[in-house]
Image 1: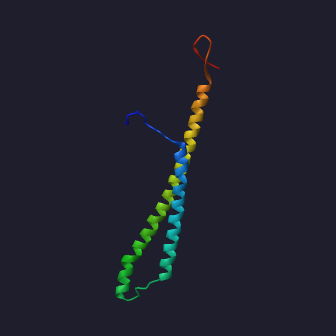
Image 2: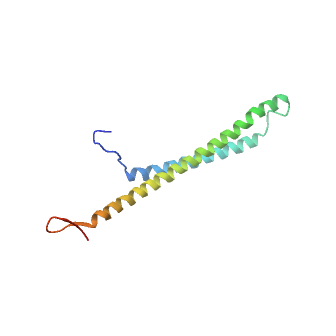
Image 3: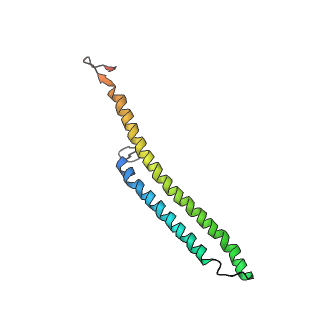
Length: 117
């Protein structure tokens, strides 16, 4: 642990400021994937239907599918990171409010003893 002994140092403002970047990158990657798909579809099968072309497609085809699938996972992952950061920030705020309300119910009476309302 660091010198301060802090376990968590959560800055809600940082979470809220950073979360939109993940959404932006998710959207940008989704657009890039769409552009890739359209470009590959437009290219068709320029390698031909001869034996060499079929061999090429046999190797090439599955890799295109894997790349598209992996990229979709990344798009969804970036979006879920954004959602998790927003939820974390909101949850941290809610926890602070809960703790604050718990302590606000405790007061010190004139005799110096803690008492609950």
